[in-house]
Image (tube, rainbow, N blue to C red; front, top):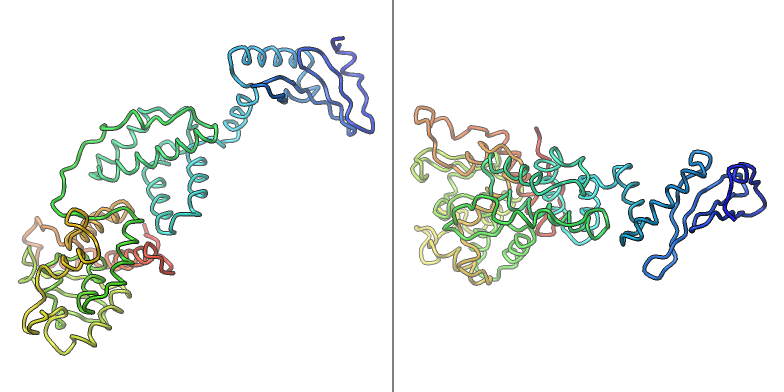
Length: 401
């Protein structure tokens, strides 16, 4: 027999839960403590399920019946009322906000990712995604919303990073979909929406996991110690291959932790300062024991009066198993440029460290020291990041500002 308002109001607690049935799966539970809870029992995919409809008297008998009828309409349409209820609760609590879901996904993946990769993914999202769609429900975000995020990145001149961010956003949506918080991945409609970038002539590696593998391979190089040191210094200094192999001990100041390359050796004919991270200094101190009495850091194997061959580093990479289309000596520059930009370092400081063309010739003689304090911090942070990718235990510096 259906319940009445009086029967619900007068229902008394006992020493155990008491059940009062209204019909259509709706019933009232009166707990020993006196709480009165509305519940709906129903069948979903041949299994018995139950959903909460609220607490009496906040939800009256009339309200509970309306909720029951609404739930039965959902069932008739092939929708599970419990899933709808769960999604409503998630939205109300902010559990389905893009940033919340993304951080949950990162936490899950952190068990298999390196600390450096976790840091990079988090930085990309915090800088380029969360400020724009972080608080929005993953279910409400559209392909147009994501495209707007990517177009902002294109406007900054980081189209390569924009494509990677699209991939990351897609992974977050796939995680959200698997968790029942989203209905699909809107980024699947954005393939080809980002302006293609010109292919580089210098093969490089920018995937953090692959970089870690490369660094470990370099550390395990079984050839000449001089060649190994050149390979180890290349990603830390990311100078041009010719600048690396022509490096002279007279240009290195280990106490000041810097390498000053004369303008005559530089592409733009101006002096260039390379701040040396502590990892680079350690490599150079080891190398100094071998070649420190001569002119060149990396002398030719035939004569100490000449630098190593331009093919030495390239041949060593091939010996390590990296084909021509995978990595080159020049590729260490592209690697550093791509990731440092993605990490949010001052673009001018990065360009200055890469010693790219100076447009104001009047100031050219003084620009070797431009952005030097920030570049010192950046070079040490970069070295620490590479150590993390290689699996070494370090404390990475945080970017300031």
